[in-house]
Image (cartoon, rainbow, N blue to C red):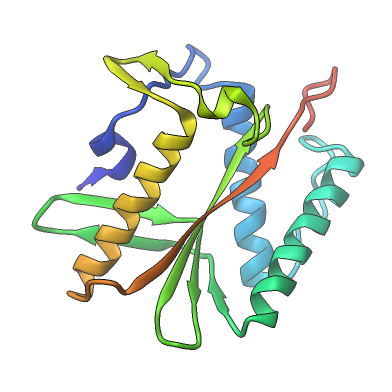
Length: 178
């Protein structure tokens, strides 16, 4: 199967070292998010990648998200949630799949960035790889594709009620830590 991001395309082109600092930090933070929601805690040994201030801010943000979801009666699954459509030959991995009390789902996608989702950098059109789209549009397209895959997988239109982009703004210090 093709990955969702390969199917919809992207204006992003990784550099020769395998991506930007934000992309590498995003992968690290994605893993921390999964562990937080699946194991109920964050890893302790993060000194080499993250400052203690950033660690505490991330922990506080995740605890806040978890509390909001729990208050609504939502159940969270965040470990290897793969959705696919064999007929289309497309698959993707969700950051967080939320089970709602009414039997419907919400898909939460954690997005790390060096700038705010309220910044013009997030909503301005970028040109790359023959595409013209903003980061916001890219993220919404990705979530919409995940929604279609999940609904096709269960042959159930309208199974997904909410698509949520959960932004985390990151910065690196002089030592390269988040």
